[in-house]
Length: 538
Image 1: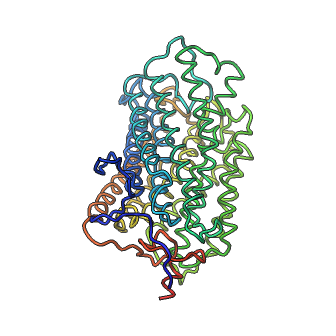
Image 2: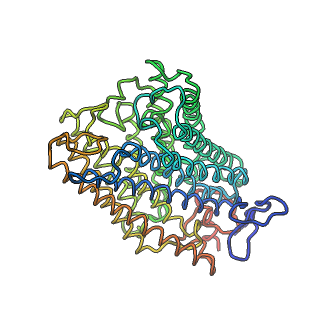
Image 3: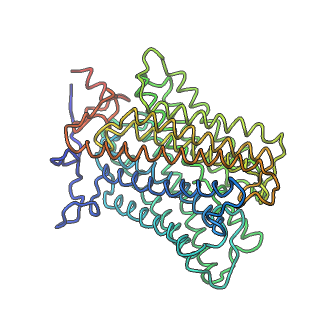
């Protein structure tokens, strides 16, 4: 046994590692001054949960409005609340959750014990949390023009836009800037703070996926920032850049949610996390770890294929995969799933609740894939007249499946994030609620679309089809189950967080081999599993 290094941390009395100098000189380390990566990771998880709860509750209210004649809950605010529902889920929740997991875990996986730039990490979080709150506030103070980033065409140009529209644009710009800062910090952490011997070939799959997605985010994020600057200039000063065919093309690639790479990059950290979960709980290495990392990198690269599409994709019914190149992202995902299956031996597999989330992730993507094959034969409408089918497909592919994968990652790494493993029975309950809830919502929207129900409508009165209300009732029930699942997680995480600071921590409950499970002492890295090597040498 050889131990060559100690993590560059200072351990406090409550068993929470603290980066030396994390608080400015002369100030005690508090919630607002800390730059400890594990605490910041927890803060991201909490903030993202707040944002997604807002999104889900609004989504349920919108479905209730559609579930019967004469129900008036949101009334004329339907468009505004729909835009808020989608923006909070896609822009605030999913990026915040994967950044939070990465902030807590990646420094441990590379043997650093801290972020490359601790105070930049703190700045990124508080910018994200503050700007996210401003984004929610923009919908509270008024109605931002149009449906924002969900619209396939630029918002109407007016001489002086209202405060809500300007606040919305600034808030989205700041949220994206925070994500870019966090991505740059994580990228440098992986590139520069790896311990000796931890080559790129030996990086855990999650750290490799973070390397890929952060590099891609640094390329894609500034595009959206540029788009929001153009929106602000047009709306505030009447610049006219986003006007006419050229302006519509810029809007498609810089602002529209489904025309930008960052809308599709959320799947990449999911792939890395799920791969590490398979290796840890399968208690076997992948049959080809190099191929797995190559597939993860390919998924990040192929996310940029959406930039090659012309304006015809804005009328496609097959969002969020409207072109052959965008469908190609599914290829590395499918091949990686085959690698997982080839690497698992049932007799060696150790059950953990995180594996159920992997199964849920796969089931939702398979269901979405089957519907994508069926949909062309049904001649579904696209563009502004698209059917409810498109909403179901977007929910399943870009929200539900990544959400299950990321919650699985939280359960897997909860001993290192919260100081205690999350309760597995509560985890199973949450999984059931989320899977059934997401499945019911997507199924209702798929069936409604096949039946001709339009999307983005405040009521079905003009459709003159009373049976559409039944689909909305099923979707409402699914949304309620999702909300209950999120509340179960809040209770579970709160319990783990509270008990985690009141007793000794089990650093390596899975007998795993990667460095996040090493504790304070870092072994010589001579393979993919240095902790397992150290235990075998004892």
